[in-house]
Amino acid sequence: MRFAPFQFWQWLSSGGWFGQQPDRSTHLEMAQTMVGLGSWQIKNLGSSQETLDWSNPLYGLLGLVPAEVVPSPARYLAHVHPDDRDRVRQAHATWRTPQNLVTPNLVAQNLTQHLVTQHLVAQNKLVAQNLEAIEYRLLSQDGRERWVREQVSVEWSEQGDGVHLTGVVQDITSERQQADYHRLIAETSQRIRQSLQVDEILQTAVAEVRRLLGVDRVFIAQVNSQGCGYIAAESNDAMWGSIATEEFPVEVITELQTVYQQRGTIVHHSPADQPQAGFLHYLYQKYDVQAGISTPISTSGATMGLLSVHQCSRTRQWTAKELQLLEELAAQVGIALHQGYLYRQVQETAIVLEQQVQERTQQLKQQMLSLQILNQQQERLIHAISHDLQTPILGMVMVLQRLAKHPEKPLSRTMLDLMLDSSQRQLSLLKSLQEEAAASSPMLKLDRKPTQMMNVIDRALNDLQPLLANSNTQVITQFEDGLPVVAMDASHIHQVLEHLVTNAVQHNLPGTQITIEVGMDDGRSSMMSQNNRRYSSDREAPGSRYPWQHSPCLYCRVQDSGRGLQPEQIALMFHRPYLRSTHNPHITGLGLGLYLCHQTIKAHGGEIGVTSQAGQGTTVWFTVPIPTCVTSAIDLAS
Image (cartoon, rainbow, N blue to C red):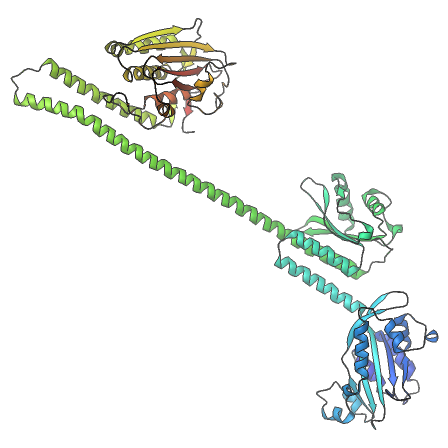
C-alpha cells in the first residue's frame, strides 16, 4: 500500500493515537523520517489541558535541539520567513477557530463534501477533518531557507469530548526547485516562440538563471565576426561588479573552444579545483569567483556562445539538477539565437528585395520615359520629313504638269534651276535619313589607321569647295609644326570636319570667315580653357573610360566669325533630337550632324565642345588622343 505523505501520517495515527499502541512515538518518528516530515500536535484544543508537542524531525527542520527549546506558536513563527509570517499566523488562527471545525455528526452525514479518511470513520473511534494546506518558507537556525507545506487535521473522539489538531510540515524545497526549473524552461521556451528579439531573450535567460540558482553573476558570451569574444548579456550582484566590458581576444577564443570541445560543461566547486593558468584562471582571479559553471551554447552542431554562472561570495557544491538546468537552458538559448538569425536574414532579404523592386520600378519608369521621348522624336521626324519633302515634290509636280500641257515650249533656265534645287533638297533629306539610321546604331565601328590630320582637313575642304564658293566663305588653316601621325578613322573624322564647316556656312550669312586650327597637347595641361570645359559634351573626366587616359592628343578648332549662338542652343548642341535652324528657315535636314560628330569623337576617346557668344562667332573644338593601344569598336550604348 502506498500513501501520500499526509495519508501515510493518518494511516499510522489510526492505529491508536490516543494510547492504543504503547510504541506509537517510535513508529511515528520512523514514518516521518521515511517521508521527510515534521509534525506537531495540539491536544485538548481550547481547554485548560491544552498542550503542544513537536516531533524530533520538526526540530530538525528548524535546526533546533529538542532538549534546549520548549515548543510554542511564537517560537515556530519566529522561524517563518518574514515575508510569509503574517499569512502563516492568519492560517494558524483560522485553524483554531471553532466555526471552522465540523462536528462528528456533520462529518458522518457529508462524507463526500469533507475530506474524511474513510478507514478512520469505520473504526468508530475517531472522526477527522483535513483543512486546506499552505506553503511557505522556513528559516533554520543556521540561516538556510526551506520551502515547506503544512497541513492540519482536526480530530475528535467518538464521544466528541476532545478536539485535537495535528499538523504535518513537509519539506518541499526540492519540489519547489523542480517546479521553478520547469517553469523557467517553459517560460524561456514561450518567450522564444513569442519574440524573435535575441537580445531580449538573452537578458531574460540570465536574469532567470541568477534568480533561480541564487548566484552572484550570470552571463552569456558570444563571438563576433572578427573572431573575438564579448559579453552579450549579464545579470549580476552589484557588490561583485560587472563583467560586461570584458573582451576575449582571438587566441583566447581558440583556447576556450579547445577546452570546451574536450570537456563540455566545466564545473568548479571551489578555488582548489579551478585552473591555475590560462584565461579562466585570469577571469576567476580578476572577478573573485569562488565557484562557477560554464556550458557551451550550441545549435545545429555549431557553438554559438557560452553560458556561465559565478558564485563569488562562497564556495558551492553544484548539484546535478543545477547542471541539467544550465545545459537545457543553453539549448533554449541556442534555439533563440538560431531563430533570431533566421529572422534577421529574412528581414535583410526583404530589404534587399524591396530595394530591387524599387530599382526595377525606377528602371521601368526611365524606360517608359525613354519610350515617350522616342515616340515624340519619331513624330517630329515624320512631321519634318513630310513637311520638307512636300515642298520640293510639289515644285517638281508643277514643272512636270506645265511640260505636259505645253510640250512644245522648252524649259527655261529658271525652271531648270528650280528642278535642280528641288532635287538637291530631296537628296539632303535622304542624307538626313541615313544620318538618323547611323545615329540609332549603338555600335560605331572604327577603322583606325595611321593618319595625318592635315591631309584629312585638306580633303574635306576640297570636297566642300563648291559650298564655300557659293557662300563666298573664306577658310584659313593654321597647323602647328611637327604634328605626328595619329591612329584614327580618317573617314569618320572627315565627316566630322564636313559637318562642322557646313554648319558654319549654313547658319551664318555669306562672306563669313572660318579658321581651322590644329595643334598638339602633351596631356599635362588642357588646351581648353575653363570656359571651354563649361560646354563640354562629356560630363566625366576626359578619357576616363579609355586605356589612353591623360595621354597626349591632337586638338582641332573650327572658328567662325558669324552671329554666334544662344546659351539654350549650346546646351542642346550635341543632343538628339533634330534641332532645326532658327536663323535660316530654308535649311533642310534633321539636325543630326553635331550629334554624329559627338558620337565619332567619343568613340575615338576624345572630347568635343563649343564656345560661343551671340554676335561674336562660334568655336567648335575636338580632341583626338594619341592611343597606346587600339580598339576596333566602341559600344556607345553604355
